[in-house]
Length: 345
Image (cartoon, rainbow, N blue to C red; front, side, top):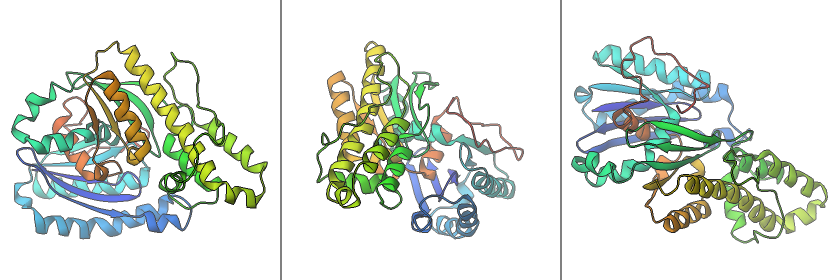
């Protein structure tokens, strides 16, 4: 049994994973309502909430799984907010010391890399290692509030980054766009909801870097374009055209994501066996549908993280601690350090 802790940003999470059976339980305390009052994540408040919520979450976990079966403790040690990461690592060190078991440091982004495979493992845990070969190498897209990147997961489970964003992440662009439009936090789901009643071609917003051979993302331009568009309109006009503004803005972001992914598939020359999607923005219905269509056109399986594993969660950390043979700090002892600015590879 692996017990995992996650506290990279504003979600406090605990999970237990049994390689022979799958996830034995997941417990998450969300801070969205708290940070919504401030229009975004406040690091000091997030740190305080982690201190407050790890003890009751661990009590709930203890009531559901037998802690005597825990043979490893895994924890997110980066990237993320430094103080938040420190709380989770300190808690994990305490548990590992008390139980005299190894402590594993897991990269948060590599948790996202492996999150689409959690459900596949649950279908047939005993056959997962064999079945995994049918899906690798994979082209994957992580898209969240803090990160947007394309990567490959090779047959030997090594991760290589193909591209990332040069400025804002896609989720960050959606949240900032929502703020410009006077919506609440988190902005992405609010934009998606309003966009359902709007026309995605009503406004012409830029699609980031236009060169087909360039895989990097850029979302600062679409955000600036939205601001200029709003400045040309009266407040009343903005309210009347809000669904169209949301639909057009969202489509510009999605188009950039899908176009770069399509270009990466073409550059791969048909060598990928699956297309993966993970991260908080992976919950966007339009993005999931367009990515699924892209995978279908390439005649490869589309593997998307389950909704509960798209945001910050300990389930993907526990799973990566077991499945990721190349990125986990498996010899990490009590000297494990936080790495707030760590990359995926």
